[in-house]
Length: 140
Image 1 (cartoon, rainbow, N blue to C red):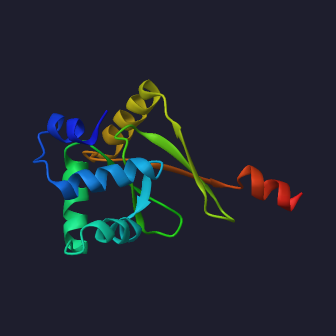
Image 2 (cartoon, rainbow, N blue to C red; image 1 turned 120 degrees about the vertical axis):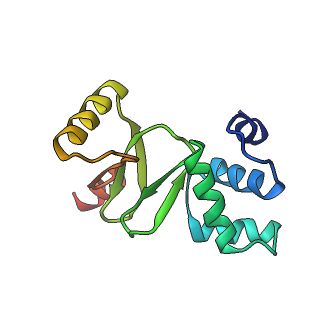
C-alpha cells in the first residue's frame, strides 16, 4: 500500500514530510530509531525539527499506522507495521528480527494479564534476547 493511501485510510492529514517519514520507515525494513530517522528526513527537509518527528511518530502510533518498540539500547525504535511481533535481539551484534505472534494466543494472554492485574493495557511488546545465527557460528 502506498504511503498516501495509508495516511488517508488513517484519516491523517497528508504532508510531504509525513509521506517521507512513512516511506523511510518502510525502506528501512520497518525499523528505524528516532534520531537516525530524523537525520534521514532532515536531508530532504532541512527545516524539520526533532520534535516534529516525535509528534508525527506519536500521531502514526495513535492512528495504528505504526507501533513503537524498544530495543536493547533502550532507545525507542519505530515499526511501520501495526501488527504485533516478537522481536528477537542479538545480545552480541544487536541485530533484530521480527516474528509474528499468533493473534489468538496473544489476545487470550493479554486478557488474562489485564484481568489479573487490573491494568487497562494500551500497548505491548515481546522482546526475546539471544544470539543470531551469525554470532552463534562465531562463538562455536
